[in-house]
Amino acid sequence: MVNISRRQMGPPPAEIKGTALIVIDVQQRLAPAIPDAQPVVARISALINKAKDAGLPILATEQYSRGLGGTLPELRRLLAAAEVFEKIHFAAPRETAFAAAIAARGLRRTVVAGMEAHVCVLQTALALLAQGIAVTVVGDAVASRDDINRRVMLARLDRAGATIADTAAVLRAWPAAAPGAPAPLSR
Image (tube, rainbow, N blue to C red; front, side):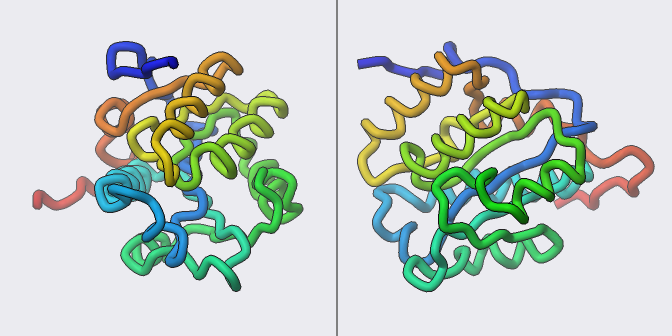
């Protein structure tokens, strides 16, 4: 079995132009089935907040929301200005509206977090890579019901050409605020 450790995780994209955060399927009826989902949700919250501070576009998806519910309320509040896309395909780029949003922004790089790692996160990342879009998967901000599936997915995406990073590395790589934006208030 492949063990992805922090030492093996590469650097996230430091250049923010042409980069977006993609939050995949962190939904009301899915998250409770994920062991230790709360730390993952907390990391995704931190990524969303930092992406907003840096002026990055944020795209979120919901897989069959009638069955799996909407995005978790604590994330939905943070995603108020983000585009949230309903999807029926595991690979988000197969959805017309999502693909149009990627194209309209001229995205060259994506940072991906969400659930389930071995299904929708994997298929979305592979589809983006196939389109020539660089993918950084935030390894500690993706989850599956069984962690072995997450670890196998990370190894597979590493072999496919994605960068595997952790939340701390991504947060450090992105600027504190978008150029020209007022500095965020101290907390």
